[in-house]
Structures are given as C-alpha cells and as structure tokens.
Image (cartoon, rainbow, N blue to C red):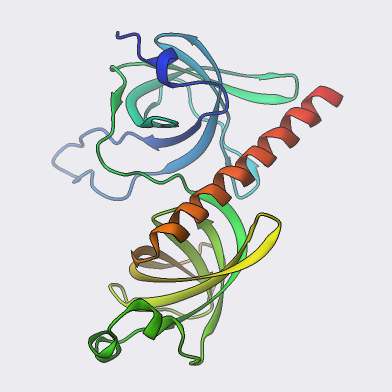
Length: 250
C-alpha cells in the first residue's frame, strides 16, 4: 500500500462514500445508481486505515455493515482522491459515532472534477426553459432576467455541479430549467440564477405527490460556482465545530 493517505488526507476532510455493487449472476444486471453517503475524516490511523464519522441520512444514523466495501472520495485541498475500502469496525467515542475503514487499493487522484454534496433545506424557484427561448437568447442573463412565473421547491442537497430538489410537480427528464435560490455569503443573502438539466425524477418514498429532481448545472457563472462551493465548505465547518463542541461538553 502506498503512503499517500497521510500526505493528502487530514482530519476534517470531507468524504463521499459510494457502496460497491459486486457483479451479479445471470439473473441480474447489477446496474443502477449506487447508494452514496457523506462523511468526514476523524483521524488517519495509518497509511491503510482511517476513522470517519458515521454518515447520517434524513437525520438518522446509518450503521454501515462490517465487511461492506465502499469507494471513498476524499475532498482534499489538492484535489479529489479515490480508493476502495472495507468497513472493519464501528463504535461510539465521546458521543461521536465512528466507522473505521481499511484501504483495499492505493489512493489515486480522481481526474474528473467532483463536487461535494451538502445536505440542506433551501427554498428555491424554478421554471422550464424551452428550446425556442434558448435559441433566441444570446447570453445567460437574457434568460435569468425575465420575470416569468416560477414554481416553488425545496433544495435538499447542493454542490458546485448541481442540486437535488423536491416539489409537488414534475419536470420531464432532460428538461432544461432555470433555478433561483438565495445563499448567505459573507453574512449577506445573495440570489443565484443557474440553468440546469434534469437528470432524473422520482416520487419520494412514503410521500405521495412529492417528487425528487436531480439537476446538473449546464450554465453557471464560474465566480458564482466558486461562491457556492465556498458556502458549502463554510457550512460544513460550522457543523463540524458544533459537533465537536457538543462532544466536549457531554
């Protein structure tokens, strides 16, 4: 095993966990979207072992099973690093739930640009942008400045590359939509207007009439994208500080 882990990964580093789906027999294809969770590094124990926070989903702790394999994506200052790892232990330490992974492969830099997804609950408005409007608009501002009717939704996670929102209506997959929402930047609220493509739509489990949309940005101002990423990192730092503060006072 290489010695890259402690070189690039440090406590507080954000991590995406994607469950590994091993090849199935001829009775199934094994395809489909992989389950993904977010976590953070607590400590790099050795070059092939790392402690992470146990992930949460819908405000509930996700107890990852022992011996389960995951692809880990570490969001380090120098880029995104990937490896495959196996759950070898889990426990509670000072009111913090910990999961321990052993690396199965070397850490390698991921060449694709990956964006950390931040779970949230942000109000947004959206509307469909049809082909005629796209064809007649010379620049993004022509679309974002129009005061046309928009529908309400709630962003449930956001990243520098897209967002996921829920609403009581649906857009067609591959639709192009305009999304408007506000973020607190430097203590002040700022409006963001991004154009994205709907990648998937599904009804929310146990919530009849509520639909989840996954959207990829296709036109966003580069400066605003960096501001969105900074917002996410700042909010994650606040969350980590709160978690550490609670652990220290209990």
